[in-house]
Image 1 (cartoon, rainbow, N blue to C red):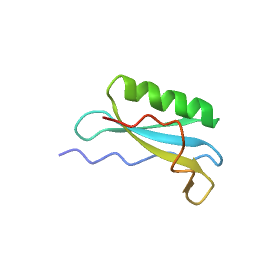
Image 2: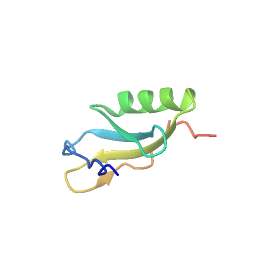
Image 3: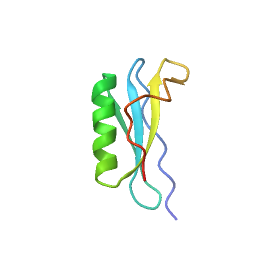
Image 4: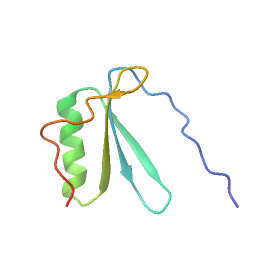
Length: 75
């Protein structure tokens, strides 16, 4: 059995992140520089019925702004 691939990157400070579940055991992490770009990209993936999770803005230690106005709610 193949060994599970681990996250091989560091989160960038003051960037916005969300994840997309892509298949059985695959999660893609997406980052954007601005809040508006991140919300637009997140909502675009929701519109095409992808399963997404908003992580928020990384401040160097934890995610902040985890609840944001303007995010589409997955149905």
